Amino acid sequence: KLVKSYNHSRHGSIGMILVDVNKSNENIVWQTLYGKESKKSIQFKFNIGDQVRISKAKRTFKKGYLPNWTEEVYTVTKRVPRRPPVYKIADYDGEELEGTFYEQELQKVNKSDSDYYRVEKVITSRMRNKRKEYYVKYLGYPDKFNPWVPAESVKDLK
Figure 1: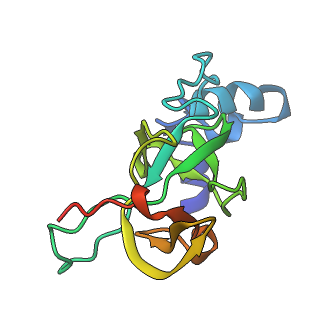
Figure 2: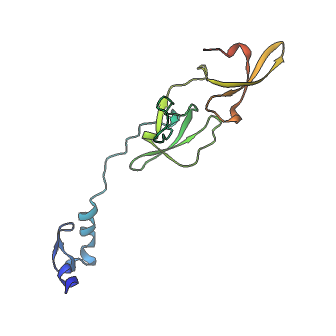
Figure 3: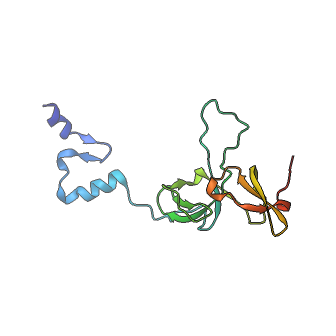
């Protein structure tokens, strides 16, 4: 009796009685419930080739003065047209990171090869062609990006 009463009463979400729903009007009911697909084109914030940093998740008691973004800079390689839009990114070597990233997880940066990179530590040094070189670890970058750089290009900013 309860089920019969439920099925014979008007439902606000579909605007009709449940027993009146059948194969011939199921599309109308679906459109009423879920609406038409939006015809608006998806607006992307980043373009392919843009350089971005990734947001660092902060825990409750993490220090507020620590940066909220990675030091390492990535490149947008693909824009995925979803709602909300997401992006695929790759590191400096072109190695694509696993997963996708939302717009709010990325921050656009304008970094060129002539910009300075912060050195975490000088690992070792050598003489090459009468010039001193340092093998350095860049702050926030994995070890695979450790390069030999001319000593004169390393600046002490302290």
